[in-house]
Image 1: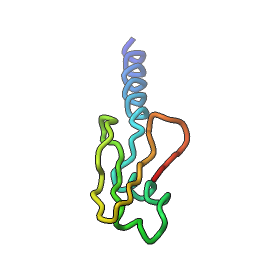
Image 2 (image 1 turned 135 degrees about the horizontal axis):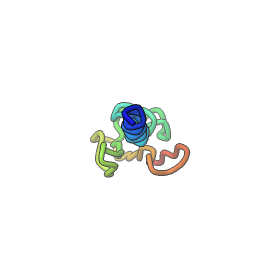
Image 3 (image 1 turned 180 degrees about the horizontal axis):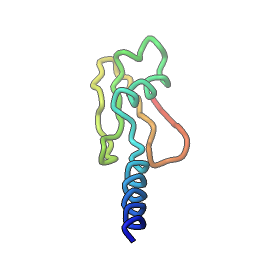
Image 4 (image 1 turned 90 degrees about the horizontal axis):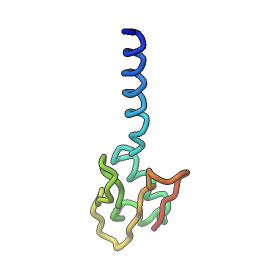
Length: 81
């Protein structure tokens, strides 16, 4: 019975960890700006997702370009300007 309980606890812990699909802020920024022309990337505002999955501003920009990071709740990768 103890072994079964340990396996269950590990399965729940692994499942919880695996479901956290939100990438770190720096990775979200790097992938989001790939959609922008190279000359606008450094000054672009980047919107992405915090650990709760809410849309937030990851980086303020200064050139009028806005990039949106990949939505972790959708399949595949999709970044937009």
